[in-house]
Image (tube, rainbow, N blue to C red; front, side, top):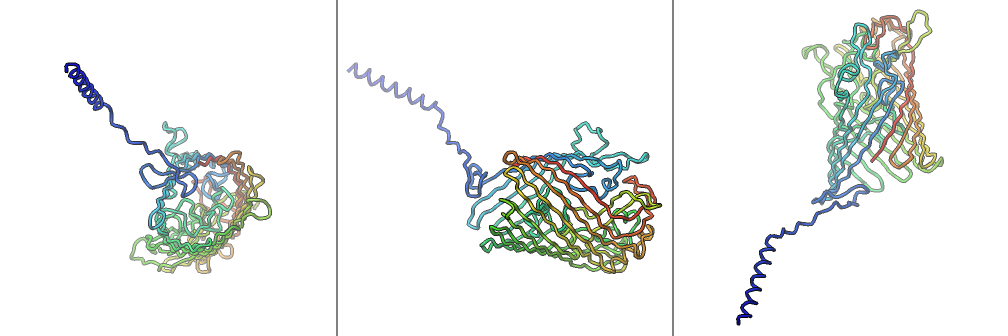
Length: 508
C-alpha cells in the first residue's frame, strides 16, 4: 500500500509539472502565405498576399543626350534653339526612371483592371535667357548654373502618364486616346516631333467604351478631355503684333472655357498579317470675346473634325519581324489630331542669307484650329499629313528603322485676309502676294538600335526637319530679345534643322 501510494503520487506530480510546462510554450504561429505566381494574365503577375488580385510591376530606366537642339526629342525649330546662335545648348541631357503598376481581378463582370504609370526625371536644362548684357542669363533650372546647393533638384520632374480603370468594356481615366494608332507617335522612331497623325503618348483623360466583336475586330466610342492635348490655337487677329508674328503667332490666343469634350470613335482589325484602324474625332472650338470684356461680343462656336487611317503590315519579305507602319490624317478645326500632343505648333527658325541688305534669313509659321477678327466668325484651319516607318531586323541584336512625316497647314481665303491685314504683318512689311501663312513641315530620320542582352537597348536617332514656308520677300522685324536678334531686315526663307539623339534604356 505504501509503495502504491508513492507511485501514484509521483505520477500525479509529473502530470502537474508537464501541464505547467505546456502552458508556458508559445502557441503555434499561423502559416505564412507566400507570394504565388498568377498565370492568368501573362508573365510577371503574382497574387497580392491575402487577396485574389494579381499585380505586375514594370518600368524602365533611361539615360540620353540630344545634340544640335536646345531640348530632348525635338529639333531646333523655335525659341532659343531656333535662334541658332551662342544661346542655344549644343547638347542636352536627361535621365528618367519610369514605374508602372498593373492590377487585375477576375469578377462576374469580367476582369477589373487598374493601371498607373509615372516618370521621374532630371534634365540638364535648356537655355532660356537672353544672354544680352542687360538681360539675365538664366537656364530652365531655378537659377543660374551652379546657383543651387541641392543638386539643381528643381530641374527634376514627376509626370503622371497613365492612371485608369478598366471594367466591363469601359476605360475611365488617363489613357492613350482611342484616336491614336497603336504605335502612337512612334511608327519606328524615338524622335518626338513627327506630325502626320494623332498621338497622346502621355495619356489623356477620357470615358471610353470598347466592344470586342471577336476575330480581332474591336470598336470604341470615347469622350475625351480637349483641354491639355487636343487644342492648338484660336487666334484673334485684332491683337496681332509684329513681335508675335515672327514667333509663329498670328494673333492673340483667345480660348473660352472648355465646354464640350472631344467625341472620338475607332474601329480596328487585328490579324496575323498586321492591323488596320479607322479613327474619327469631333472637336468644339469655343472662343472667348472679341475684346477685353464680355460687352464686346464673341464669335459662335464651331465644331471641327479629324479623320485618320492607319495600317501595319508584319513579317514582310525583307526579313523576320520586319514591319511597315503608315498612317494618314485630315483635319478641319482640329489640328492637334495631325500635330500630335508633343509636336511643335509654332516655328521660328533663323539661318544664313546671301540676299543683299538682309542680315539673316527667317522662317516662321503657326498652327491654329481657327482664326477670327473683331466682329467676325471663326474660320477653321485645314491640315492634312502622313507619317510612317519601315523597320528591318538585321539579326536578333540589331535593327534599323527609316521613318518620316509630311504635313500641310492651309488657311482659307477669309482667314488669310484677317492674318495678312493684321497690324503685325503690316508692320513687318509682309503684304499682298508676299503674305501667305500656309506652310508644310516634313521630317526624315533613321534610327539604329542594338540590344546586346534582353531588355537593354542602345540607340542612335538622327532626324532632319524642313520648314517649307510660303512667305516671300523680306521682313522688317523688331528685335527678338529672347534670342538676341536685332531689329533689322530678314530674308523670308525655308529653314532646316538636324539633331541626334543617343539613348540607353533598360526595361524591367
